[in-house]
Length: 86
Image 1 (tube, rainbow, N blue to C red):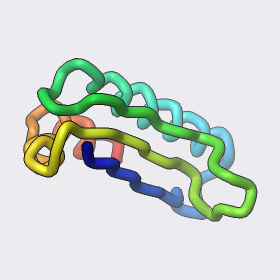
Image 2: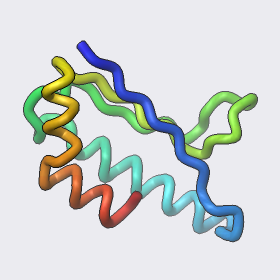
Image 3: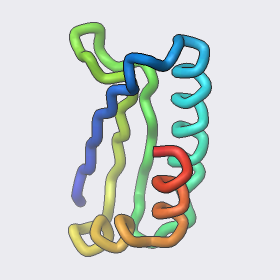
């Protein structure tokens, strides 16, 4: 198994309401990939990271192996989400 974690910080010039909308769209889109990409075992987006973190969003995903992670990176469904939301 391979764990894949990414942290994002949104631009500071986005107001809080817009940040919330962006975060919710990213969560919905990325978690929507669950079951659609071979080798992707688990994917979750955390919108409330630890208080000590300066990140706004955390992606926590689990893959069968390194090859599955590499395939995910170029999978059309993932690329579409990344292009539109991230």
